[in-house]
Image (cartoon, rainbow, N blue to C red; front, side, top):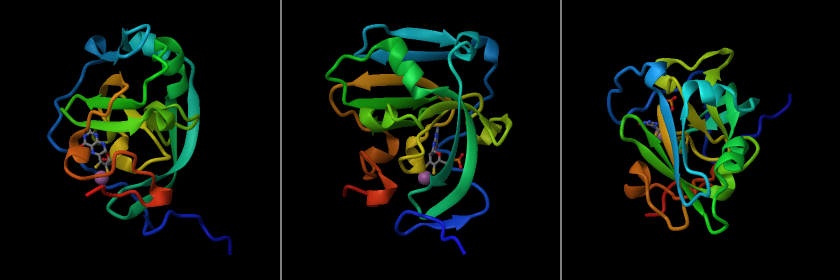
Length: 187
Ligand SMILES: Nc1nc2c(c(=O)[nH]1)N[C@H]1C(S)=C(S)[C@@H](COP(=O)(O)O)O[C@H]1N2
Ligand SMILES: [Mo]
């Protein structure tokens, strides 16, 4: 038998468990905007149509929740984070990205993880449009970090040279959150 690789302290389960800090009102794509701002050369706001004109990528990856469960082999499709970096041209001293959800959720992650080739802004999961509870219409997906970094209902990305903590990070969860290093909490 081939043994599956899984980060320390995690075990596989069949389905995602939905976590939400607050109920989210539906979004119509007509009024959807993704705001890209902070320490960048080219701040901008993208409409849904503009977003769909950007490059596409498909990523197959395991999903690791900091509470100890993982789901194997999810297939996400969307815009690679590298395309966003190319578009906004972050200042050379940018070290952090703060992702904002429409529900008020925020999460910070190192720019180096954001810029990895497997990070994407996903609008599809397993061949279907993103289900509402998993972040429709757009979610950040960072397979290299614990799932609390994968902000659902994504409405903005803020590029920062100094750390600004997100919702769970304020409450003690790790600023980086690399599951292979088991970076669950910093206090
Ligand atoms: N906007 C938003 N994104 C979020 C959350 C949230 O409450 N709001 N919860 C996070 C947490 S703690 C986890 S474990 C994952 C869960 O993803 P899922 O609900 O698609 O299973 O979403 C993350 N992204
Ligand atoms: Mo979580």
